[in-house]
Image (tube, rainbow, N blue to C red; front, side, top):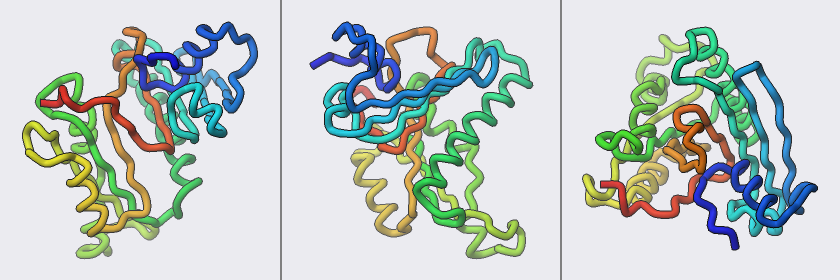
Length: 213
C-alpha cells in the first residue's frame, strides 16, 4: 500500500505507476488529458472499480483536475478563462447527477482564521444564494433559477460540534438534491499551490481534522 501524501487523483496515479514501474494504464483506471490553452490544462482520472479504488486509495468516480500555470501572476483575461473552464466542468458534472432546477447546498469546510485552511469559508462568501429568494421574492429572479443555499460550518475547535453533525442537521431539514463541498487539498508539489483545482463526484474523505483549530 502506497502512503499517498496528496489528495489529487492524478498525482496518486502518477505515484502508483512510478512505484510499480507501469508503462500502461493502471487496471481499473481511465485517464484523459487536454490542453485548453498554453497555461491551462485539464486531466480526468476515472476510477472504474474496486481494483482502481485499491490502487489509488480513493472511491470510485470521476476526478477532474484543472491546472493553471502562473495563476498567481496571471492577467485578467487568463483568470477569466480559467474561471470559465472551472464553471463548464462543474456544470457538466452537476448535470450528470441532478436536474436543472434541483436544490444545491454548498458547504465551505475549513477554518476562516487559518490561511491554508480558509478556502472553503472564503468561497462561501461569493456564492449567490437563491433558496430564500425563490420562496419570498421569486419575482426578482429569472425563470428556471436553481435553489442554492450555502453554509460555512466552522471547525470543531471553534464550535465544539463535529462538522458532520452540523451538515447532517442541515441536510435532514432542507433536503437538497446535491451537496457541493469545498475544501483545501494536499499536493506533493509546491508548484500547485494556488494553481490547481480538483473537482470530483465522490465527496471528500479527510485523512485527519485534528489540526483544524
